[in-house]
Image (cartoon, rainbow, N blue to C red; front, top):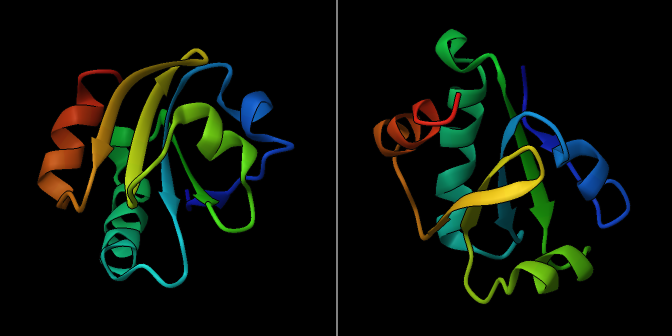
Length: 105
């Protein structure tokens, strides 16, 4: 599975059931460029096959980041059945994210 880009228009629909992690990022953000390959690698991890991996460009989509009060990027939000259950700001390595996601997957 790969990381799927979401927009303000489809975010709620895609995250309303199951477990997902969304990476809020921007093209100009250095730490975001480091976070992206970590998310890509985790999306390929068989032990996390029930987790959906998403990303939202905060420059192209203003409503969802505003709804979550995103003030710093990268920020990742783990959701379970439409509810935010964990929020992580700043770069996180593969092991850190894997451990967090396994609590919900």
